[in-house]
Image 1 (cartoon, rainbow, N blue to C red):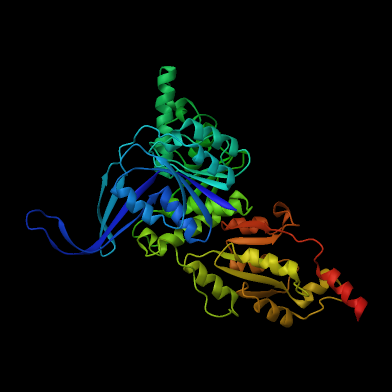
Image 2: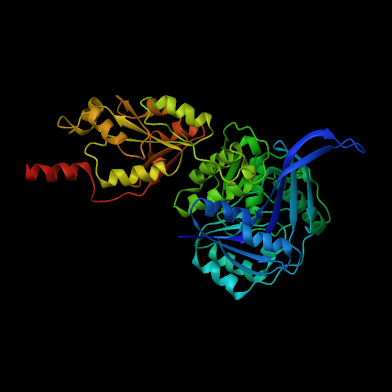
Length: 480
């Protein structure tokens, strides 16, 4: 499946060095430059991240005819780029860092040009998309009428993640989720307020509830993020809005009237937040493409954005978060959960009897492990299985079942529990994701409310029919 990234590209230049003295003619630091690195920014950074994760990516953008564009083309090597002419110089953003700390940034050629022309090849590239990320950096591409018409039609069929810009175009109707940060959300709401005041001769912002109407009806300066998200979702007619809140995580609002959903972020030491929004949008697109619900995709994306920053963000050599390394198999599932949470990672848990492992089990376990940084299996003890399945079960005792599960490369730890349900196990582990097979309805699971109480989410992975322990046991009894 292919991910298409649509949007404006920038050239980011990182100048790194050390500052040990002040300039003699002004009280400013002198940076002794040790390294200069040029990389793709804007939509180019989103595409670079996704390609680095191993995904098939097409970048749909416009490029200038200048030296900076040549650097961009080199930075985008290995990515399919379908580009038209921008008609404007390449925007360049140069960041100077000393000992890893930002000193100054200066921008060149960043004034927004008129909307560029979109070629038939660019529109054709959208037809092969399984999911689309619109990374609008206010350079006009997302304002093109032909492009917007195609995106509006595609939004009815595939997920579109829209990362907006204050100077950019509004999202097309029906996109899966719009991801402004809090300052952008307030700016959009203020702009809507000005537009509403101009159209209606001005109105008293104190006379309306912004949670039930256009964000132009109230002063958004001190608005609750959930209120802002709800009002912006109504204004944009999107399926959801996710307002990102930096170290506080995010606030997600759906179009079905559910209360705003707070998504906490793990505690993370951040030197430079550059690229966090791009990482979040890229992660959302991947998990929506894989068929996960937006709630689950949002939880994972917030964790992955935090991990990206924890491991150096765009200043890191590869520009990608490094995976959390687990050393050997954990006999202590609680210690594993603490270690992964402490490193800003995503703890995934699943549960069951796992009596006679079969292909359905292994496929589900592999899919669950792909959602995070570790997978802990909550395993029903022998006594628990007997109470649930009857006196003839389990076929294999809990020690053998544990050993077989730990032999799988995608299982990191096993936690055996004696109760009929895994609530006590989950309360101790507090996983970010609780995963069940697709034959379950997560809204009906008794453990759903518990997992959501600490900000976790429940989700499912594909169910594989005609593969069950009972069928396997019956087949074995016929040949014994």
